[in-house]
Image 1 (cartoon, one colour):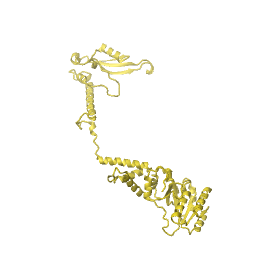
Image 2 (cartoon, rainbow, N blue to C red):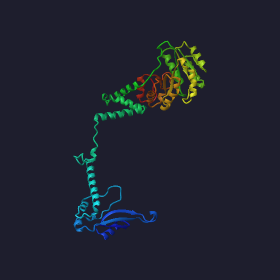
Image 3 (tube, helix red, strand yellow):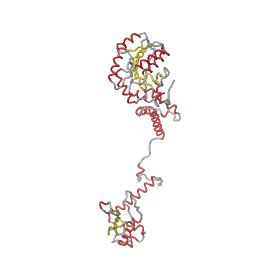
Image 4 (cartoon, rainbow, N blue to C red):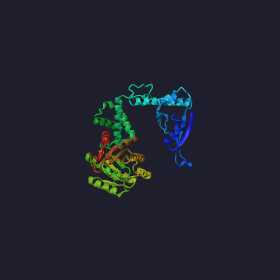
Length: 422
């Protein structure tokens, strides 16, 4: 075999040079572009063509029937496999003269030819051209069809839809997965065309996850004492007034109001206004001793409600100071007032910081400002403190909801579009 490298300005002139020197039976082995000049940045690029001709093979026997278009084959230097292996290559490889391109070259081309034929068959089977493909010869047939029954696939889809709905209600990913898992056991019994039945089933699961404990007013003759504690701006004073008005309407006027919120004069005045409207006594105390005296003063009352100054969860000293007022010996239930629109992580942090007071219940305010109420469930899952009230506006006493498990579950699953009023 004679191999020679040619340089030309383009392929057309290069082919002409090869044909003139090696003849029309020459085979192009490779092509590449060479940049001339310093560092290859200047000068006109040159095309380098490597061509070969088998000088020992009788041309008449091997090439008489090969069209001119296949005698000079251009092979592009690309990353894909662009050369077509056809009968003309077979003819060259099957030549009686075993010296063409050497034995190794012939083997490589033959292997490439078989690869292309196999790939062609695989692609045909993939597109459905082969009606009866043989799984033993097709790499695409090695992927087995899903063994999941259609009914189970439908259930998986429904589970995803249910979880998406729970996430939309503000229920976090962990809790929504827990609910979906519990519900999936009964999916077969639920009509997929009845969203109401599905929602009812979800509400039943949610209510079983909730822990609520509203005050049991009038359950015995013991005086009940409730203190409202929490961060600033969550609505402690307004909530106290709502509870007082609700008790006044449902039970009796045997109520006394006490405030130790001496940090804000406006808060004291606000509570006094509520007291005047409801004709209830209001006492202002500054020291723990005065609080004890005020409680003793109103020992004839059935209910004592105590307002406190807002404390930042990060202000441990102020929380400790508050604990000196609310001594366990006084048998005061501490209800931690939380604003529902607050971020979940901050709510959990607030509960942790105020836990040193011995919190007995939580109250969520401003639920009318939330587009979703899943936070009520999320917080319940993370801590064991029961919920006593939720508030849904500024009206006294209307915007106060004494909770039950079912009522809270219904609120969570409702699409809150604005103020919620009973």
